[in-house]
Structure formats: C-alpha cells, structure tokens
Length: 122
Image (tube, rainbow, N blue to C red; front, top):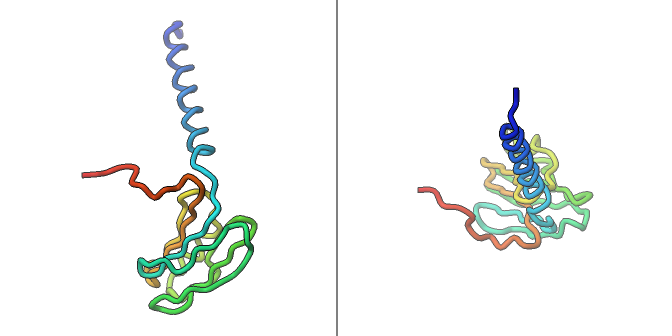
C-alpha cells in the first residue's frame, strides 16, 4: 500500500516531468530562419516564412531545398543513399538535415538563438 510520502514523491516526479516537457516544447524559441551551409561555409540564409525552392552546389552536385508552410526539406540530392531526402520536413528549433557525401547542412534557427555553447564535454 502507498504511504502519504510515496504519493508525494510520485506527484513531485510527475510535476517535474511536466515542467521539463513544457520547457522542451515551448521554451526553445521561435524558428524563423533556415541556414544552409556547404562545406562548412554559409551558402544561404532564408526566412522560414517565405515559401520557395532553391539549390546549393556541393562537391557532388546540386542539392534541392524546399521551404513551405514554415517547414524545410531536401527534395533531391546527388548522394547515393539519399538519407537527407528521407529525413523529410523539419520545423523545430535545432533540427537539422545533413547530407554528408555532398557536405550540406540545413539547420533551423530563430529568435533567442545566439549560437553559444550550451555545454562542454571533456
């Protein structure tokens, strides 16, 4: 049988879990920019609000990118396995699409994103 303290611990853990979920879901900021890097250099920075299609040139060829409905995806890439294409749409802060063979990285940034290190491992 549960004691009063067991119930207090369970309720406390549930409260902490719900608070953490809220911070993760709503506290990460607003996504408003798509940043595309090729070979480590920024190639395109575009607002997420504008629907458009564009391509970036990587070592293997052109990677086609589409922005629509405040989401972004890779529609075509010259890489063999096309993992970047199969990633599909991204729309959350800090999500990325990476095409390693073509050296293309697509990431979402937004308000409050200051690109500072949030942790260090040793």
